[in-house]
Image (tube, rainbow, N blue to C red; front, side, top):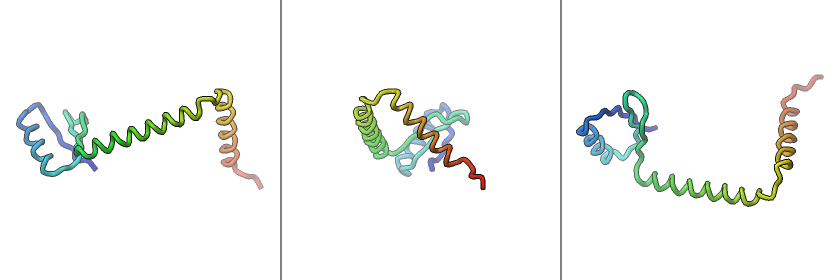
Amino acid sequence: MAKRLQIDDKPSQVKEFLKQLDMEKGEYVLELDGKPVAGIVPPWQVEQISQRREEVLALLRQSWEQNRPVQGEEVKEAVTKAIREVRQDKTPRRS
């Protein structure tokens, strides 16, 4: 879990925080007037997040291309059928 740190406009406080961050290598949520305004994570996590984002976007593009030929009416029918099946499974059975 990220540590929370209340900051104000004092440059010296920000400088001290950056020194502390370099030593502790933790995750932080910076708050201003009690409200979260920024998150700070180690550099390796930023790269990891970027890589995962690219992987997810690639999967979305692949899915988009595979499903491009599907017509809207087909999707609507499939969703309607799935909803009907789920509702039937949740309907209490009477003895």
